[in-house]
Length: 290
Image (cartoon, rainbow, N blue to C red; front, side):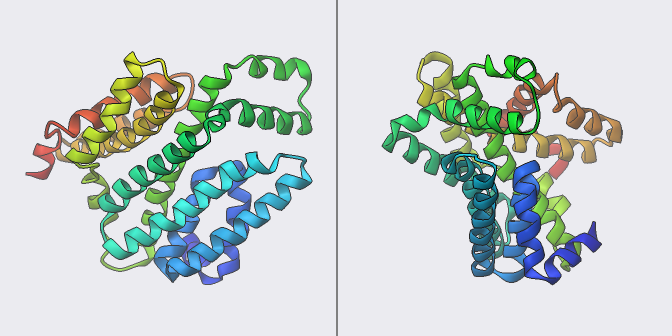
């Protein structure tokens, strides 16, 4: 993996070309490439790469007859926030700070859009429609698409925002790890195990999560879905820290990550996110840090 990180940063165009490919098939890798670019070459270079990648992705989307809004709703946030997260990490030299800023910045941006443009709360219907169109262009029949077409658009919208936000955060971690492989004195493992939202940020994120349980508001539910993604990564950090301090078998963490894949995805996300939420209040990593 170190060889890949060296190779991809050796020529700027490699990051752009790979990001264009991966933003369509595996979003976290696209975000990670922009984080790595920001850490390696600086914020300005990463932002230029993000803009070029967005332009290339839009051209491909238009050639496939995908809507401009649908393409931009995926590519633009992931790539621009990826570059910004890498810039924050480069400036602060703190993975926790970059993590907190990315979580809150992404949620704040989404909240502004959702409040300023109420029609954006129907993002699930828009993205689901475009997703079905791409699958149809890929050769799937109406019978094969029927189960997906019956998906609740509102629920799909929450899942979409959660996945997009989680992809941004995963990209930040992956990009930071790649950079640690090619830079001296960058302790990614220790920083990830110490990853925290912080008590103030954690409590702020608890508000929409709690409110979503009692308030029938799609706006609140959309924001809550993004908040859960933040708690998920803190929960994973807690598990890694306890695994190291308590000498857990490596299979435990492997099983946790495997459980994030369907059909256990929902239960696992809720369980690990609950650990992250509790860690904002109680010192679950006290033994790991002693």
